[in-house]
Amino acid sequence: MLKKLTFSYLSILSLTFSAIAQETNTATPSADSLNKSILSVKHDLDNLKKLKVTGWVQAQFQLADTAGAKNFDGGDFLSTSTNRFYIRRGRVKFTYNQKNSQYVLQVNATERGVNLVEIFAKVTDPWINSITLTAGVMNRPFGFEIQQSSADRETPERSRFLQILMPNERDLGMMLTYAPPKGHKLFGLKLDAGFYNGTGIAVPGSTSLNGAGLTEFDKYKDFIGRLSYTKSSKNEKVKFGIGGSHYRGGYARPNNKNWNAIATDTAGNKTWTLQDASGSGITKLAGKQAPRIYYAGEIQLSIVSKIGTTTLRGEYITGVQSGFKDDTKSPSAAPSATLDTYQREFNGANVYFIQRLGKSKHEIAVKYEWYDPNTKVSGTEVSSKYGFGRGDIKYTALGLGYNLYWDQNVKFMFHYNMVTNEKTNISGYTYDLKDNIFTARVQYRF
Image 1: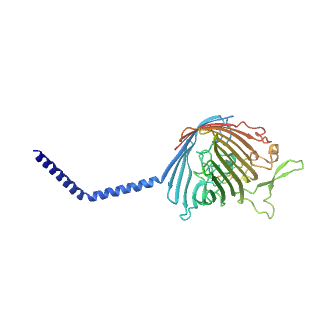
Image 2: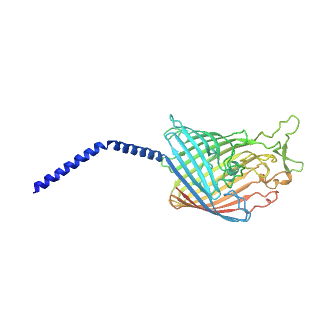
Image 3: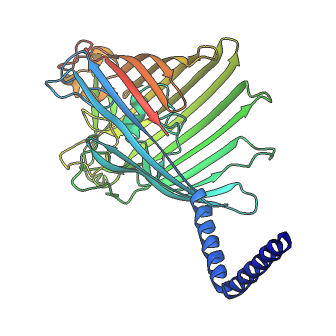
């Protein structure tokens, strides 16, 4: 009986394997199709691996000393408000990497609207992997603070002078970069040089526009160059950086009136002097370039010790800025023909002290900055009686902050910025305005 059961079982197995073999032979085309589908999926997955999606949102509460306070900590308050909740930034960034090229698209979405932050393409040479061409909307290659991401910054905003001279940080243009790869004897050296429209980019709530975006409004292009060098110790406990930047450009003057020098009258009062553009034989100035010429230096030092990571950082800038009587901000659109040009010598700086407390999640940040839009006059010399305006007033600021890095995604920031304007003979600015700003921010980053 056992032999019969065994024989029957073996017979069934034989028939089964025979059937499977026949089915396999007849299903070969389906298997090929399946293999092709698998290869197609693998190809798509390989492409997806090249795409990186990152972003961050900064939700914050701000409190000002007085209603309607004007500031550079996220924009002026409404005339009836001393406090506000709002989304400072809501970013999503898409980066697609190939071996020697990259595509980047970043957008910003807040309650004030949606705007393009940057969109550019990068191509690196395949021979020495050191020379890169970047074209599109990108950060201006000037100084350290512009290059540092808003997600990494230890204080709420960039310095006043950068927001005035290079509004919204980014511009449309084309740049060449020389940066030798790791292992090269010049690794750490970086040279950026490019040409830009000079108008910056549009940001809802901070840029006044007649259209949906910014376009070049004159024939002039602006040159920006930056040379920097960074070095780290073998154990990565000491990091050092130094750099220099240059900006040379300008925009078309709206009329022939150019206030370009400051004289002293017989009574010892300093006064603006108008360049004569209407006399016989003198070239008309309307449409000619109003200069924007900047020189800047930077330095960074970071040391890891028993007390934590200590960072010292600073930038200094000086040069010539063409603006208007009450405003030195670089224009994003063609100025009105009624506005005279005021050509000022200026300087500005920022200094950071940042201390991470041991190996904890706690950090202290102190920042001092100034912007002097007209170094030829100061204090009560700045008088409306002699042609000066709000565009000649110097500002300083001392910011004290505490940051808590809750985890790899969440950061809490508490910052109090104490702003001081010089006391002048300009109406409304004969005393220091009460315009200090407190910011409490939570940032989520992915």
